[in-house]
Every structure is written in C-alpha cells, then in structure tokens.
Length: 127
Image (tube, rainbow, N blue to C red; front, side):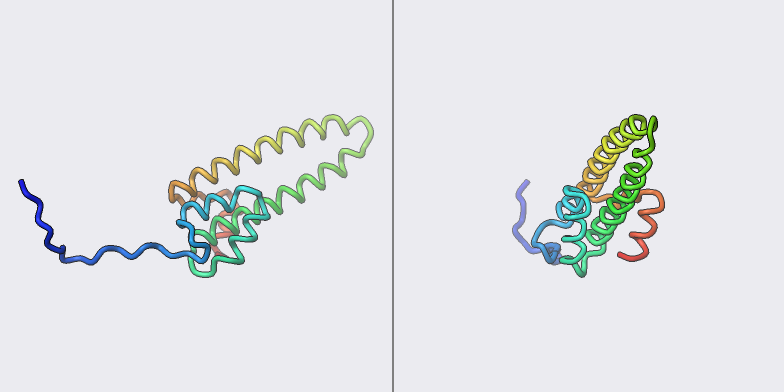
C-alpha cells in the first residue's frame, strides 16, 4: 500500500511550551532533584504550567516539613541516653526521604500527578 502525503484534517499539536524550555515532565521531575532548592526555582520560574507548579510546590512543602522534623529530632537528640536512638531514626528517615523523592521524580517523569498525603492536597490547592 502506498501512503499518501495529503494533509490530515487536524493540524499537528503545538509543542508544549514552558518557561524553562524543558518538557513539562522533565521540569516536574527536576523539581525533586535538590529538595527545596529546585522546587523553589521551578515554582518561581514556571507561571503557567500547573503540572510543573504542582510538583515544584509539593517538593518545596515536603522538604520544609522534613527540615522541621529533622530540627525537632536534633533537639530531642540532645537529651542524654536518647541521642543515639534519635541519630539512628534520623538516618532511617533521611534514607526514606531520598527514596520518596526518587519515586516522586519517576512519577513526575511519567507524567503522573502523584500526590503525597497532606502535602499533595496543599500543593494541589495552591499550584
């Protein structure tokens, strides 16, 4: 069979433009790369794309919550006899946060709007 070179009835879709010039899924995934830093950068730079703004804000809020948690745990770690246990908990939580952000990066790269509990709802509302 021969393929015809006749134009179709529908025009081709325009490329998705973002303020960064990146594809939306790549920009959203990069929002999680350096925790709050890249989240803040993408949230401030991207004004129109709700998908990127959602992931950037979710990264920013989750990072802020974790920083507050680690500060609280560090204060508790100053209590004698509890310090070592708190230190172990901080290591486990830090590893868990790293895994969580990698999962969020993968989901964002796949184009999913993966919502974290509580944080995702806040980000959805304000993105």
